Amino acid sequence: MYKPIITKRCSHCKKIKSVLEFYKHKNIKDGFQKQCKDCQSRYPKTENGKQAIRKAQKKHWKTPKGKVTRKRYKENHPHHVKARRKVDYAVEKGILPRPDSFGCSFCHKQATEYHHNLGYEFEHWLDVIPVCHKCQFI
Image 1 (cartoon, rainbow, N blue to C red):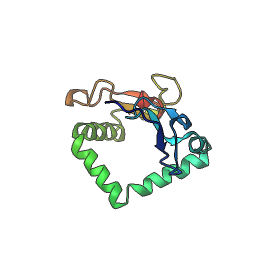
Image 2 (cartoon, helix red, strand yellow):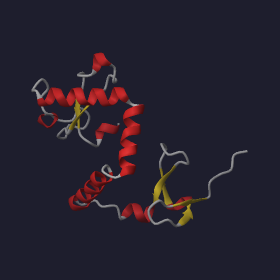
Image 3 (tube, rainbow, N blue to C red):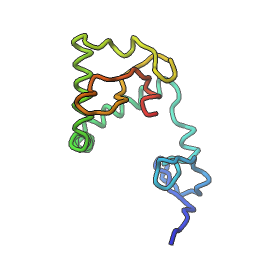
């Protein structure tokens, strides 16, 4: 029998709160964000805050846990990794122009990376479109 969720633990402040104190998120199993609204509102929106997060993420990839996570991703998604490497190589050798020389294919802001819109099969490795970081996950 289905049992509705009434409370949830915030992943940031670690407090158990009512689900009404969490934003909805359809891609998460229980349907709610992992952080409560209070913690979410404190999320860094300034460039310094974003840089601090990037620095922490970069540091995480050097830890044993980060290395295991990266290794597991490479094992589970070998086509993604090979396709990404092929695009990076093509940009480095001048076969493809840098993505930041284009506008995003979706929102027309400056693009930051390429997206494999046709898939990660061998024949589509260089069939990419420029997108901004925000639109990469659309």
